[in-house]
Length: 336
Image 1 (tube, rainbow, N blue to C red):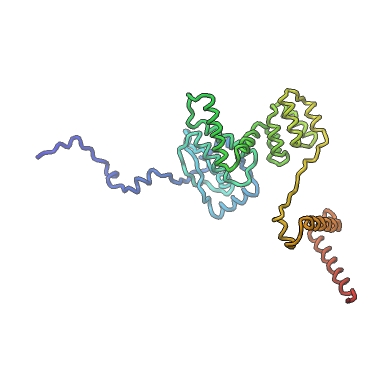
Image 2: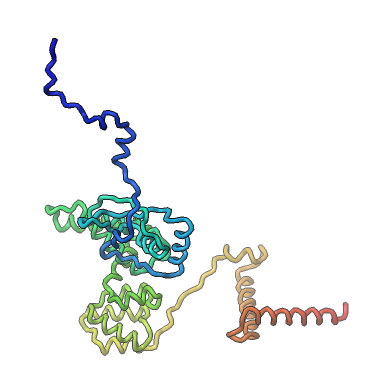
């Protein structure tokens, strides 16, 4: 009996004899060694790559152990790869003399790439306020784009925006209000934002100033430079109020910033559980307070023994002389 085999198509030999494991492996991401000159930084990424002490430590670690955590990059139309995660490792690799670095190549659209770039960098310690501010803003914009629909009403769009901010806050560990305040910093002029990064401009005051328009912020930047002083929270709030009322002028900025600053009163509160371990169980709060003030007075007296430029060796020598004097005095004292 003859069979018609004209409709049968046999798979290539390589497919017939490939294992299930190899077929699965073909779909997995693999680590590739990619030349550093084929890697480009992520467009407009907000995280600064600085040759500081931390970078030098990373360079030394790479020289000794190599890059242990691969970079993540996505392929670009020109054949190069855009770094999504690992800008510091890439730079440290260059400084360490590497020609190639391990990279996981991943296909990502623009929004997914932004979200991954932000999330991977926010895990770092010592992130500058400006870095966090622009990272939050970029991630929020990307989340708004994802699943964007043209048929949503203005109310639905507003609800989606609130949901996106809540998601950013939840994933970063910050409150919704704090995320919104960080994003406000992106409205500052670069020279003012630099002062926030340098801890010369208080965060809360900077948030208030971010509501000034660019021209008004320019007046303030010039005044800060001439007065060598940044606005207190109360001054920043007044600047914001005058700006919103349309009454802020360059002369008014100078007048407000030239005022004698009222000291920002801060309370120092010590919980009883924090200090009770240093006192007997029977000590009352008033007795604890008296003892603490007495010890502070003693410390103040001791500090007067040493010039402000005293080194630790100076202090040690002085302390030894005092202790030797106390010992001699005690040895000469008559017994009772």
